[in-house]
Image (cartoon, rainbow, N blue to C red; front, side, top):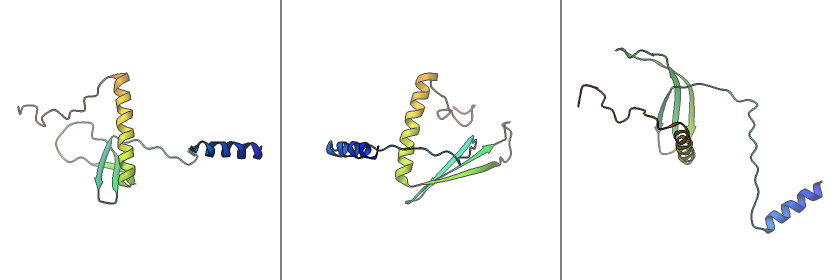
Length: 112
């Protein structure tokens, strides 16, 4: 069996291509839900914080968002994440329709 693997590796190298298999180990993964995300950056890193807004009613006053996760990425990893998310959301909208997230609406509905 070791001989067969060595032969396969040599054949792959002779063609000029390497085959790499990525195995995902999720044995220690934790899950969190977030309905709020904030992002900041510096030259060296992009920081994303995630949390939960439990203020379901749109009343006045302060809103406290309970933060539960912080992810720090290099700008290169953040760029790859941006491209991946863009592709996933395009696929989602192709299946389920466009999402209106309210970016084109005025802040005050009476102001025009």
